[in-house]
Image (cartoon, rainbow, N blue to C red; front, side, top):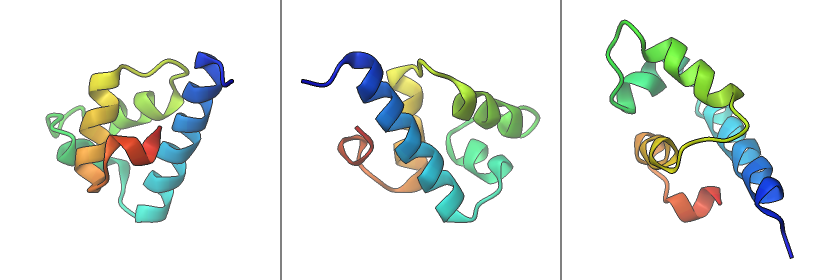
Length: 73
């Protein structure tokens, strides 16, 4: 049985891989996630570094990348 930490680690690996594979700059991903232009790049960078992402931010990322949340978890 997977622990919550393992699930989060696996999810963040998938998120990072998808972000890289998309070829989009962090600025573009951030804007797609709904962040203001002034903070979009920094917000995505912080999200990609976190070890405990908020579910809402994972949902925003999934929408921005055109995938379901289920594909990430």
